[in-house]
Amino acid sequence: MTYYMLDNWWWPYIFILVAGWLATDIWRWLGVLVGNRLEEGSLGLLWVRAIATSIIAAIIAKLIIYPTGSLLDFDIVVRIGAVIIGFIVFIYAKKRIIAGVVTSLACLFIGNWWLV
Amino acid sequence: MNSAVKTSKTYWYLQGARVLFTLPSLFLASAILGFAGLAVEVGIPMLEVAFMNAAIWALPSKLILISSIVSGTSLLATSIAVALASVRFVLMVASLFPEIRQKSTPTWQLLLLSHFVAITAWVYSFEKIKDIPREMRVVFFAGAGSSLVTFNTLMILATYRIIETFPPEVLGALFFLTPIYFLYSLWRNARDYSVYIAMVLGLVLSPVATILFPQVDILVAGIIGGSLATGIYVLSERRKHAQ
Image 1: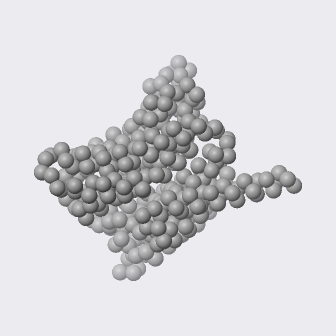
Image 2: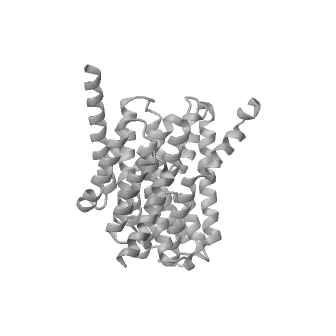
Image 3: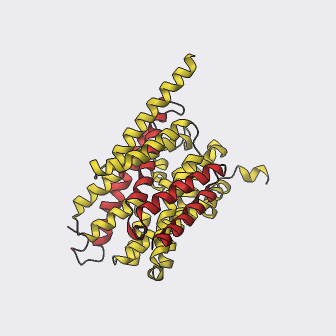
């Protein structure tokens, strides 16, 4: 039962609904039910939030270290270097997001040009 | 602005929709263009890409779905891979919604709204929600979430035919913007230092977990990192109060 197995126009949509929408939203619904039992300011909520934060940080690292698509054209050293330099500038610029983003992007292109 | 307007739901819905004119929304749109570019590259038709975007509304899930389609993976195996990568939504929704809902908010409304939870909306809501009156937070979140989904889905339809002409460096840079924006925004909006510990642990544990547990790397890194961060935070707070 692969994506291209059936010739019907609707099969890809069923595939997306089952393997994409349902497989993702089932967890969102479970999150609502769990969240309904958590009180603001409780230890449980602190823990859940810390795990959610760690998960997003892990995704950030994965998107940079093991990217998909065209970001692979940039060397891994350049990618990680651009994040670290951008982060330092971001901290020194009183946590202005735009300062970090612009620095990281500039480092990405300069580093890439340097290597090529 | 008179107070009658500020108590109307339409006003707060539109306030939420203003997310479209912010930097995070621009970065999200860039990342979604990057995703659409990948989908075009592997030959998925326009309407299917747009449908994927609106129905799933989670970038990692969409990327896994595309790579499964390309490699001819079965429906069951694809569902399992996407589901494993999406467990984090339990924690993201469960940590955000207690700040959005009121005691009187019906659960069915929250179930519908939960579809809009993805990293951008999660980060943005934590940034803004404390300044929104409690009884208007559900409407505000609905405005932000629905406008992001609608705008980005229309954008895919509008750019599908020209996306192939984008130089690969540009698509690569678009993919780079999202993670760095999340990094800076989460750091900036941390309410206490437990967030810093959780972030650093998540960043460091992620590549280790990818090598050891490639299927569930994000989840393993997140649960270990978040639990350690909570432990460290609670213990050092106790020590502080004991002194």
